[in-house]
Image (cartoon, rainbow, N blue to C red; front, side, top):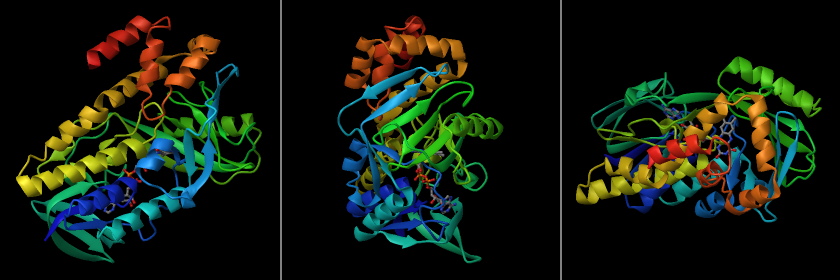
Length: 379
Ligand SMILES: Cc1cc2nc3c(=O)[nH]c(=O)nc-3n(C[C@H](O)[C@H](O)[C@H](O)COP(=O)(O)OP(=O)(O)OC[C@H]3O[C@@H](n4cnc5c(N)ncnc54)[C@H](O)[C@@H]3O)c2cc1C
């Protein structure tokens, strides 16, 4: 009998399992895959804060990011130069493997090629090499990523508010500066998000975008590669980004975190910082439940207290972006490109907490009143 069985050895599952072991819980981590971290559909852009809090070694780090070139639909460029390292580009396969090894070092038992298929009470059914096996645990953590709809419906938790369809390739592309990401807004690329070119080194970049459906994503990536004059690139890999956190993340003795709970930031699709933050909270809540019979619903309250408002503000920004025409976006870029506003972005901008910037600009932009009204309704 285990105290915790974690389903899924992505970053959130490995962090949840490691924290559970640190809390002296008898922990098993299962993943359906043989090779953790593959295939890579993620850009791997994570904040300096994430690298520090997860204590990531240099092994997975490909590049350092100090700023961004942001392009409006009419191709006007805004430069945000933070003049210091703000983020890193990591190789997701190495990153995921390192987090898994860290969990193992803390005493987590790991079973790969082991797919969870059902949970009833304290019993989980897993499939390994065609055989069904039953295991027992006090509590389960669902960290199975964006696979809830078909494969993980056994947790009977609600779906996310929205699914974004991401498409990304690795291409020969030299940015103006290898320490700057490039972001491309406008309907040529996406109906609700943006395109990106994130440099891995001097010559190669991860080029991708997200849209509200797969057909638009295919059209958008063609346009983006054309715009960047990229002739040499790998086959694009598709990936799902769930946004708008699920309404319930605790059901009986099952807690969900990461993409399984749609805890990614709706403004950027970044899910590693927020998901691993929630994974740690899940582990600590379970420790309190095992030791002192605290309620498991404390997980729901605690993670929403930490980042619930942030994710709601991000979802609001996403909804506004979805409704803006290219003309309106060009107008906003016009306002943002004023020197005072660039300084504000440099000072306040934080990729993990974009709501700080949204709140700041709510007072500057024409539709500030509307944004302020929505933000007030969140508090
Ligand atoms: C195109 C794209 C770009 C992105 N770029 C970034 C970025 O730059 N920065 C960032 O922070 N985030 C980014 N993200 C989001 C990020 O990839 C996810 O938020 C993150 O991987 C979520 O981690 P997770 O551990 O919740 O899930 P995952 O990493 O998806 O891991 C889930 C694991 O669960 C396993 N699993 C699933 N079902 C079962 C089962 N039934 N039994 C056993 N195992 C199971 C899977 O095999 C998998 O290993 C991007 C996403 C996409 C699609």
